[in-house]
Length: 101
Image 1 (cartoon, rainbow, N blue to C red):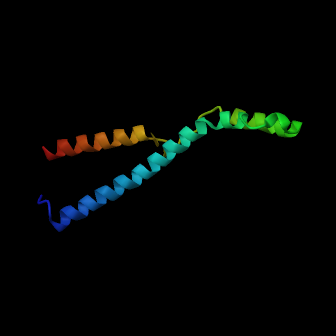
Image 2 (cartoon, rainbow, N blue to C red):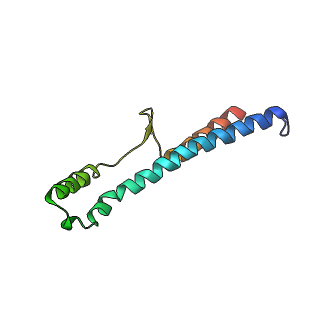
Image 3 (cartoon, rainbow, N blue to C red):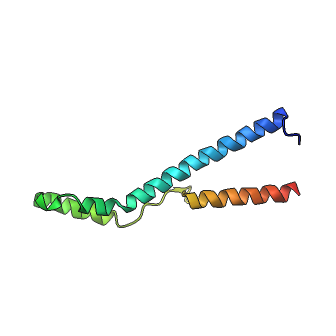
């Protein structure tokens, strides 16, 4: 396939757009997962001791819910993270290499 043909440029633009779209979801899910891991500590570092007993109970419930990590997945098949994005790129390049040869 010639490099500067219309077909090649169209396929290349599609590849870049699809890769960027997947990357955006993976980076966002990865960032939310890491930020959620620090949420329990952030809740504890508030001035919870100055709150009413009802608010203290709510704080305890919130901290309990943040102990289980949040994991984003795509169709319950693939975990959305930078690690899975890296694996996807590796597999895609391996398939491309096999098909090209």
